[in-house]
Figure 1: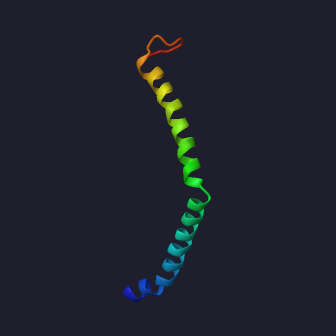
Figure 2 (figure 1 turned 90 degrees about the vertical axis):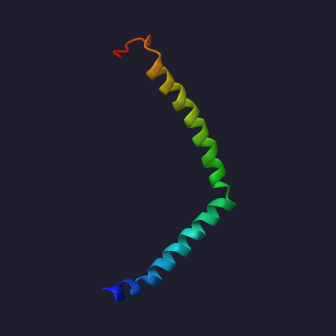
Figure 3 (figure 1 turned 120 degrees about the vertical axis):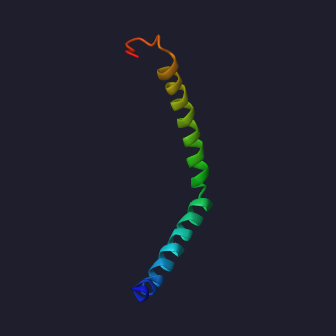
Length: 64
């Protein structure tokens, strides 16, 4: 049973190297910066809607 796990080590190493290469490429291309900007915009919009739907009971058509 333990030897079967040792046989999969090269697969795990290749997977981790691929993930590291993908993450480094995304960082160099500023993908994470783009993702943060869009997540921030979405969070602001969602926060406003959540506030309205949760705390503003005067909302037309609200059955809260």
